Length: 338
Ligand code: ADP
Image 1: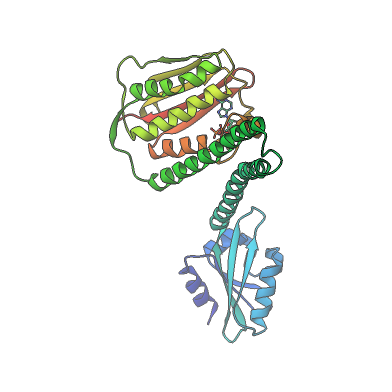
Image 2 (image 1 turned 90 degrees about the horizontal axis):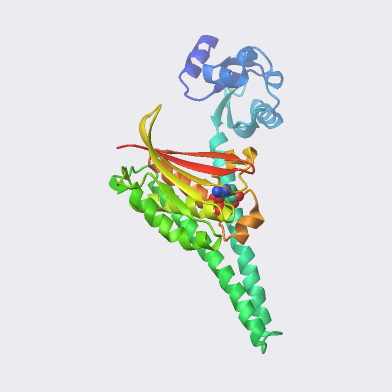
């Protein structure tokens, strides 16, 4: 096959593809491969173009007549490829096709981290409960006082597991529906008032109160009423949990014009410690907490904001977080009108 035919053939391959000669020089490559290997790859030895020992070994084996090989290729920008190397023309040349597996690998890593996190979060309360069951069976068998104390702890730990399972189910439901646009008419003012009523007793325990502005008349938006209730419940619960004792939590609904057109904006503001800016980009990740100990002590699962983010995405809206250390935080949900 002459060089022009080779180049033409590679041009029709929708993946980065290159042909290597017997001396492992790049004889031809398509534009996609050029984007990966660089402009100057043509004519150069593969070893000088890439630092990829596994791929070089696969190429050497193919050129030695050992048949097709696969190799993993990781580039300095952390992108990853699976390289398929096959012999051409009696193994005097090798065809190398690259498949970008970066997203796949990252998704797999995220899945592994998620399973590890869930297992850890479930195991902690479970271990505590098993320890107390054992104690109640043995040393504390006839101790009525200890029994009451231990049962109270076990109830708290079981509650923690229950909340975790509830949030995990909620998250998977929301994720499953994320592409289905909600269609109901929802009165945001009504939603906020009912959420505030739910959170009121927790706020009173911290001598705080919840003030709502802009909810005097109904404020209609297209959405899913249960999910929007969940969003504001999570945000208000957080504002109470992480807000300062004796301080007001302020909720405000207002209409605004964003660069995407008219929107409804709901701010949930607290006067707590605030959040260091380094945490802000990761706050909506599952199980990401600024202070794990505090979150656990407050009964948090670390999933509340992840749920908020997914629901807001489903509503084609966005979540904005503004926070200053020592001054408090404002979580804003911005929803397109209509
Ligand atoms: P959690 O169950 O831990 O509250 P979330 O997903 O709701 O989980 O929130 C993630 C983390 O974000 C919390 O652990 C906390 O560190 C931080 N956070 C959330 N809301 C606030 C807030 N209003 N003020 C300060 N920190 C907050």
